[in-house]
Image 1 (cartoon, rainbow, N blue to C red):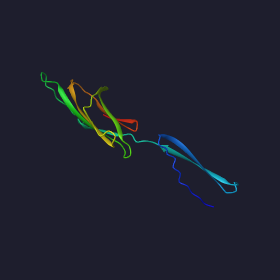
Image 2: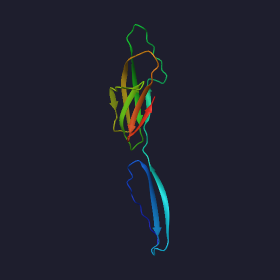
Image 3: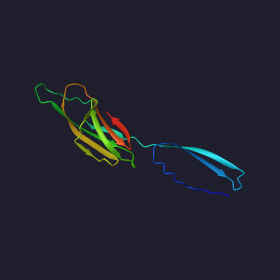
Image 4: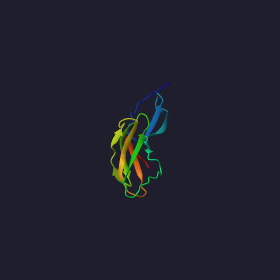
Length: 138
């Protein structure tokens, strides 16, 4: 006797699952068992800061207005998932993002201008969230 089945378990939540399959002959006198481990993971998004370039230097002349530095970044995830949120920080402090486009799709962007940036070295970080898993770029 042979048989087959194609069950659908609907494992939508992330995590590790164990599936145990047991086959028994029609008389109940012999059986075999196999165990499978299923790891259900969602992809973390990829973040790329398009502007400014890494390690870019901006020059400011004393006595002139403070610098306003524009930034633009892209968050992308695997097809079948969507970007649900984007954010950014400058030196660890949240910065506003004037224009956010593409939330709810496979790719989203954020753009704004950092106003009155003081002299010194600064770290801009961009963040994206896909399926609840955050990722960052700097």
